[in-house]
Length: 115
Length: 115
DNA sequence: ATCTCCTATATAGATAACCTATATAGGAGG
DNA sequence: CCTCCTATATAGGTTATCTATATAGGAGAT
Image (cartoon, rainbow over all chains, first blue to last red; front, side, top):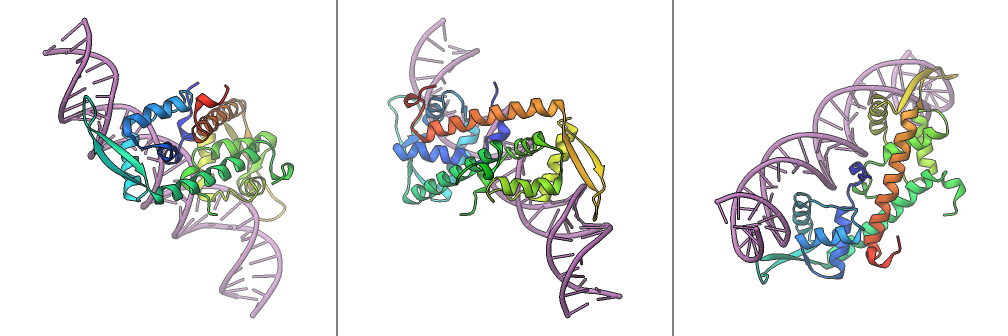
């Protein structure tokens, strides 16, 4: 089943920061890691990721540094800042609140479920 | 906490159709019902709902009929079609797959969770 | 009587988050 | 050489939501 892209919006920033919470990573690596960890559900495109990373950098959530690889092009690693940790916590709480609300509606409403 | 709107995208069609699965409703009623069932989380705006309903009608997921109220303007009721039922099932499955994948990433990846 | 509020539907234009397509560039293998 | 895999980047398009605005009936207050 093809994943409905219209359901996929706004959470990529959250997921990328979640990856960086564990360790510094470079863009291409995040795409591979996200695919693997999501059980082959997320196929984030390079054209989506790089603008997203630049946006996170502008907001001060991540900072970047170049590092040469053994072969090939030098890699641009990203590191989660203090600000990034805070934003991640907020986004994670927001995600939990949002999915809870959707599931309330899907399962019959707030009347039937204890807070 | 204000809900991060960037996490809220694409699922409103699913939620609206879920409401209509139970019974026919008119637009304004859906806004109120959605607010109530989501435990006051979703404040769907009229300017978002009506174009959404027109879109669902174009796709053949819902059909509409006018019905006078005791007072005030006549109401435009929406009914979920056969096509709408099928689309709803697909969207619900898609939502479950998507949230599962996000939670896999948030909780440490596919390696740690069975199927 | 007119003002404001609640019900009820509708459209225009803006914003944000993705997408596809394309460009650049190093290294490996046929 | 040509193609593929790694690696980063930008341009332009689509879609879903938002805000703002318009219309319109009925209720209650000044």
